[in-house]
Image 1 (cartoon, rainbow, N blue to C red):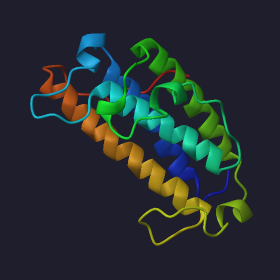
Image 2 (cartoon, rainbow, N blue to C red; image 1 turned 45 degrees about the horizontal axis):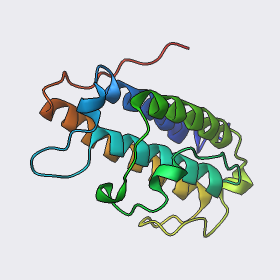
Image 3 (tube, rainbow, N blue to C red; image 1 turned 90 degrees about the vertical axis):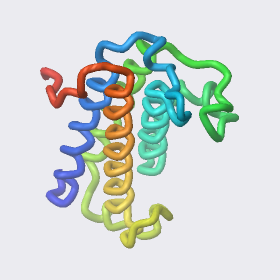
Image 4 (cartoon, rainbow, N blue to C red; image 1 turned 180 degrees about the vertical axis):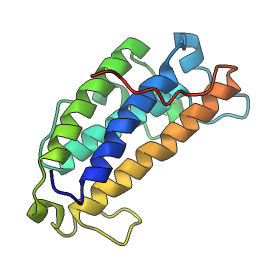
Amino acid sequence: MEPQVAPLHAILELNTDLLLNCLDGLSEEDAFQQLEGGGNTLAFLAAHLTDTRHFLANRLGHPLANPLSRYLAQASSIADVVEWPTLAEQREWWRAVSRHVCDVVAGRTADQLRRPDAHRFPLGDSTELGLIAFLAQHDSYHIGQMGFLRRQLGKPAMSYTRAAG
């Protein structure tokens, strides 16, 4: 693995476990409960991050069929989603796309990582490496939201326990 992508790969792997930890011990009702003030649900954030990892795989030239497309295709916000997959399906899809993305990121060459104009995110570095960095940060941002939502639902704080394997 190219040394410049190794820390980002480690964050992607960590975030893979942390999202699952955010969903740990939740019922379907918990995951789809919207707080009184509104905003995203844990289920929506999990779907959004899974969808984003599919986006990353696609941008890196290794698309993977996205089972969430049928749920999110016409949605621009949580209010637009009319049908939801189960939490078990979301966990399975998250694991699958995460394994795929981590393998793809680990296999990037230095030339690929330097490819210019790979994205238009609010980051000075528009290379492929910048794309990976921004989306690793994006994962972390939303996983922090998920941890906060867990606590607001009266659940224990998200654990930093790592998956065995």
